Length: 251
Image (cartoon, rainbow, N blue to C red; front, side, top):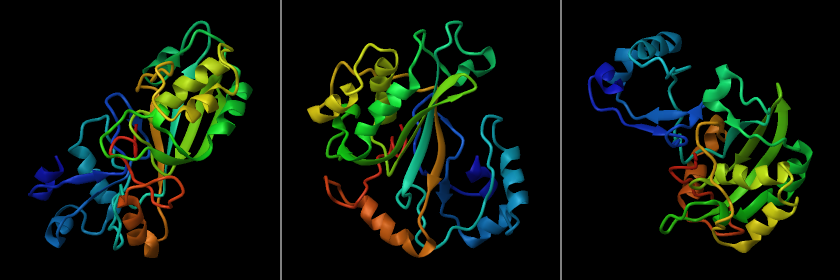
């Protein structure tokens, strides 16, 4: 679609590739285009450029803004954090019909305080291999910066933020938290699973559709290239680098 507008092949690089069914409210992408291509669509008028692009897109995709990227910017490798949300309805009648397309039905009442207590043991830098789908030569070390549950209009909403996520990590984190919330597992169970060091078959990878990429963070412009360099380096525990996986810079 963009290639048609710009008169040539345009390759997008996204901050996080989301699996089928995952939503994105705060996706960031960049494309390398020459000056003539840029002027053809944007002409340095951001609102007009976004409007023209949106007219060519299907209704379930909206471009909110377009601008020139600073030197060293890369939507994927320059990111310093990604934030996701995951919605779960524990109402015995199920999710509201207008929100069922992005809300998981869970027919057991959830104790949000218990899940937050369990989440505390997962924060920080760890090897999250027990929660990740294995990929050859890919590191599973991540720094989990935020993990909390809140009640929003009666729905349990998990907010999770990390420097990057590996394949299936967010949905597996939900899968290890819900049994704590409904009382089938003790509060220390997620921490016990994390300490195993390998994939645990008792952890369910939850469905994709309640998951939403909410926002992506970047450093100051003069730190973008350095961040790229660190991100592209393979990571092990104790290192500052943050390898972004294609899926979990998304899930």
